[in-house]
Amino acid sequence: MDMSERFSSMVKAIFFGNYFYGICAVALAFEANLQQEIHVLSWLFYVIIFVAVVFYYTQAYLRDHLSIHHERSRWYAHHRVILKRLQTIYFSVVVLLAIILFFQYRNSWLQQSLPFYVLLCSVPLVAVFYQGIGERLFRKYSLRSIGWLKPFVIGYTWAGMVTLYPALFESIESQGLFELSWLNVFLFIKNMMYVAVLCIMFDVKDYIDDYNQRLKTFVTSFGLRKTIVFIISPLVILGLTSFLIVANIREFSMMKVAINTIPFVALYVVARSLFKRKNIMYYLTIIDGLMLLKAVCGIVGMVWF
Image (cartoon, rainbow, N blue to C red; front, side, top):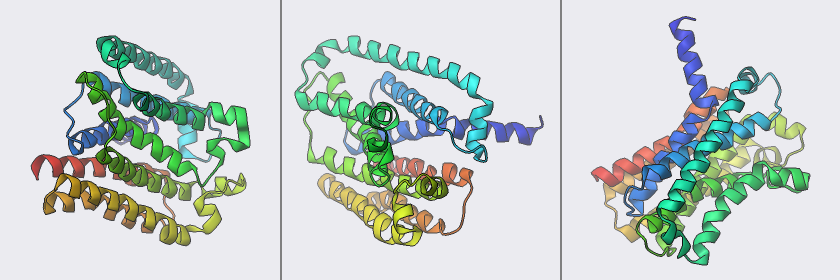
């Protein structure tokens, strides 16, 4: 195997193996820390997020049975044995670190209010219901089968993990009681809408499969042009408006606002680029890369401006 083949294999492992998703999750959590004025949390928190995201998405793709014509499907078929072994390791790491985190702050865990536990449990429950339990129990009525709801379910899971979780765990580490603020709410909406738009853009890639399975996504229901104009554009505006409200609450400088606006502009520009057919790596590097762009812009804006 020459250098170019090794590099190609490494890139596929990073993106198809969902390590890039893990990196994005940690980066977005750092961004939320700064925007909510939360101190850097224990390394256990970030490792759990990273490994849990890798485990979750890998498990989802291992369960999917897409056409062998899909490049990612071929990669999963080729590496299936090692991926299943890694899943056991990932799951064990998450459980072990969660137990350590619980006993390290046991008293703080036990004194929290009901809203804390509701928010804490809602994220993994929605995620599991979407990919596993709900699909097996309710089949066509599961969250995953409701195409128009799918982007918001995924958006809720991501926003909860990278926005609410840092606030929840900050209250644990500081031995205080969690109180949901308007700042938490608007940052949550901002991140939820951003991820929801990315999911809708990914539905463009899966248009043929979704159409054949009669899954009613926005793209299969309205077509690409109407989806971009009447669905994606309003969601981008809603996410940006939520950020501007946060900027007003926190009294951000004009430069900080401008830098944090870049990802929303990029989101709309990339959405319009989908009028031309793109390959799987475009979606994984460019579209998913918008999550990392958002995190980087947020961190840069908060640290240097």
